[in-house]
Length: 115
Length: 115
Image (cartoon, rainbow over all chains, first blue to last red; front, side, top):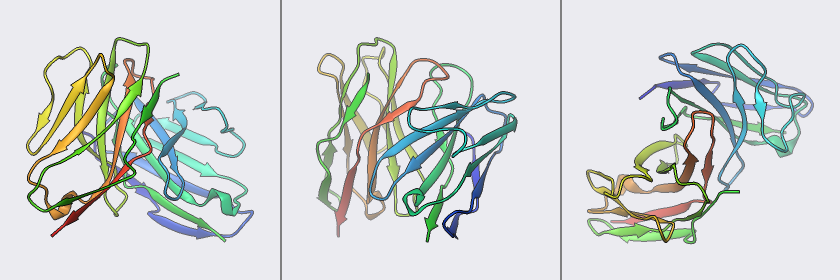
């Protein structure tokens, strides 16, 4: 299984600013994903981070608000832009290897609070 | 569209006893995978157990086992000899076969373990 780290683990940001979250995997992986978990809720997929091309966004999530980069097979960033209190959530990165059956492993999450 | 339902928002079990968490799902696919993830207060999503739909045998991992009823689209998790460290939110998740396919999560069951 892959070991995944995220930075920062938590942050408090002001309305209107942006936060960039980094996700690092200890081995090369095929797929990387970004999820949002609002307080007391389940996980919702924001987008699939594609290496070398634009991310694939789920319905309700747009690139201008959640720009994603994936420069190589072990690293990805998610930026949450123009923050509002409604963006206060946990953001989780996950990764999986090759093959359709591959299990997704998760990073420890980033807790974002917007004032 | 695929959906995952966890009908028990909260459950409680005495230490050393057995508890079963319920999960049902809806899909028209034949190739898919089902997972149970555990999220303790640390918020790290931890894989508990995985079941391939094509396998008739129920998956087991130490004290954790599943009852997979494909025709009924039911996937329950049994925790035997419950320990205080088992207290967490448990999420059932579905994934269609294919590397790019996303995890679809249920709403979660909060498990409390009483000493």
